[in-house]
Length: 65
Image (cartoon, rainbow, N blue to C red; front, side):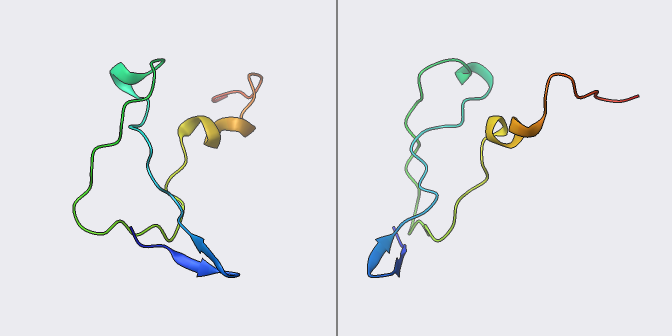
């Protein structure tokens, strides 16, 4: 795993701790993330879950006219 140093701290971002909760995994306990080959570059955050992206959409927001 490769991170970076910031303000004298070792920083690792975007480390996957479990499989995304989609399909048959939805509403179930998280499953372990499969191992990756080579060096994991932990320089930045990964794509957030849809749930986090959709926080600004409200139930009253129309889908279309």
